[in-house]
Length: 163
Image (tube, rainbow, N blue to C red; front, side):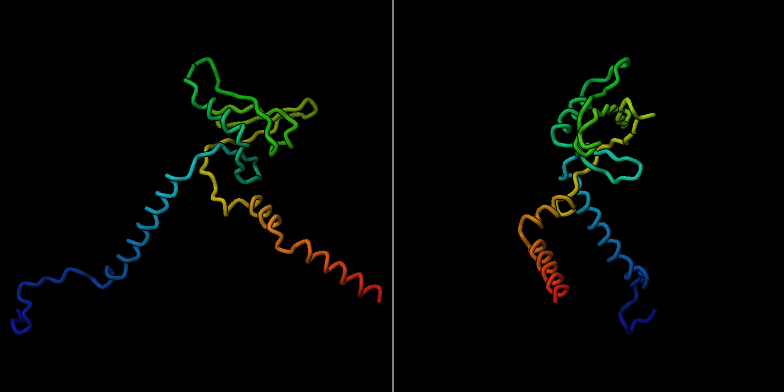
């Protein structure tokens, strides 16, 4: 032991690699905790998707019907199903039969050879900034000059072609 440095009873157990990894690990834990907090605050909504689509939420009037069907008590001979019309499915023209416990929805029409099958799931509502339709509508409604720019370009092209 080197008594001149005063480290007689000191044991060095920490390695150099641990000093590098611990801050990243703690930042990852903080990120996971914040994600968990966000998920616990975000409401759950019923969503559907076709094979090619992304998850889309049902309309608010249909959300209430689906929650009511989901919360009904279990019965062995009764399937929890409801019939709804949603504007996002076939523009609201067809009645959609949703079997909530099986997470499946069917859209039937007499002229079709087979029904269109949708997958139904309970998802977290996307934050407002991630809703593209609302963002597009908001962008257009605030009048950021998109229509004015298009009209100005058309007028410019018309002037150039006339000269």
